[in-house]
Image 1 (cartoon, rainbow, N blue to C red):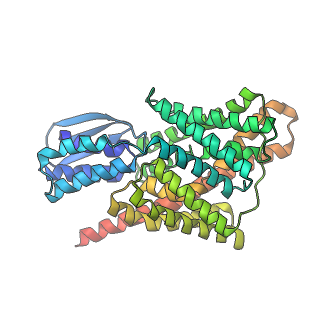
Image 2 (cartoon, helix red, strand yellow):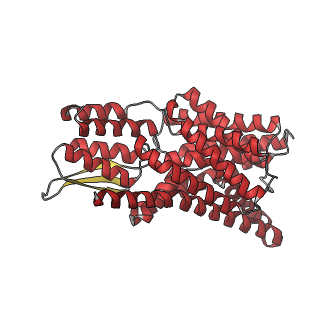
Length: 408
């Protein structure tokens, strides 16, 4: 039971969906000749042997996302269940999987810079100076995040400090007149901090009526978003500048949009420690999804929410069976393919508008209130569309595959 609890803890803590965590751990238990129940909660996992009062409670918080470790743990479980790994060697193999290093600091920093710059391109920042400032800001934030990880295990400090750096760099660029795309220089390095996998995992838990765990996951994601917004605004305040709301830019050409989306997908795959050999799959899916979204929004004239919904349903349909076959966490794999569709621009625009509203006070123009409401509602609708689009194919696949297996 100790080995089963360790496997469940590692999967749960590194981004695997709750359902797949429970299924894998119970499968491992059966390989040991035990019928176990795995009960995950925020902060702990309980493993019970059915029909007995024996149970074990282990501390576990789903704070991170590491595809490499999830893949390694699932591989150990498969080897034990297939008989290619002796059961008495499983525990040490799981310990070794838990110690796998994340992406190197060099790779992490480089791809953070590429991802932020790619998001800048997608939102219309095509000037070389603006893209260099976005990449430099994101790279500095990545280095600070890795440095902080050696001093504190608190997962909230890193996004706060990275967003603070983004605010300072953007405010300094505004002070010295280095670029006209100040909002994008501020927003794009912060968009790589949006906790998409936690939002998706929380939504899946709610859909499966794991209400407490789902609410806890979403609350954790919401706290990170609030801290990112706060860090960005604090950075502007530290330099004595103001972050103004920004208007939407015209869409970029299809080829530019698709290539930039592919770069963003590669970057987020690196953030989640995806092995190099697996990166081509989400990159291809992400580029296809962006082409579909571009056609819907630019050619067909559909709304951003509709484009995101259709594109994410396509991604969910393609990724679901592949994630199960490759034993990768669905939320991380799916989110990395659609990360560039996240409405971080609208979220941060709404936050900047709220600060401006507080500063102006009762004399604030009605247009400012309208802009804040429009940005906030747009962000909410896009997030809802993306969440439904990604998890609906997942839920349907699991429902029908389970029914099919029972019929055999």
